[in-house]
Amino acid sequence: MIVRNINDREVMDTTYLAHGGAIAQMILDRRILKEIGFLAIASLKPGKEIEAHVDPMEEIYFVLSGSGEMKVDEEARGVTPGDAVWVPVGSSHALLNNGEEDCLILVVASKAG
Image: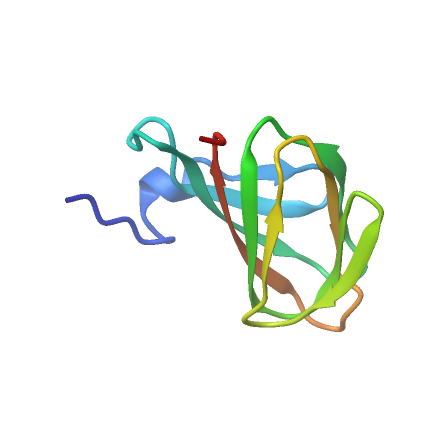
């Protein structure tokens, strides 16, 4: 069993700027995981955006707090805490924090079966 806390050094050492907008850390990734690509946490400040991009993996964005507008391909929709958004492989996707507080999300990615 492996247990990771978002404050663990192994997590903090992975801090990076995700797609021009969010500050992200890898909680678990391919260094440990076998089938799942990664589990990351990201914080997006008000007015900031995870720019539109395409990934070679299927992803799920899960909103923990804050709000925003999620766009997958040509469809845009408001998201709030508790919302999970599925992003199919090869789909362009972006997240804009259009709220007044940080938008905190979990992202899970996996190669499509």
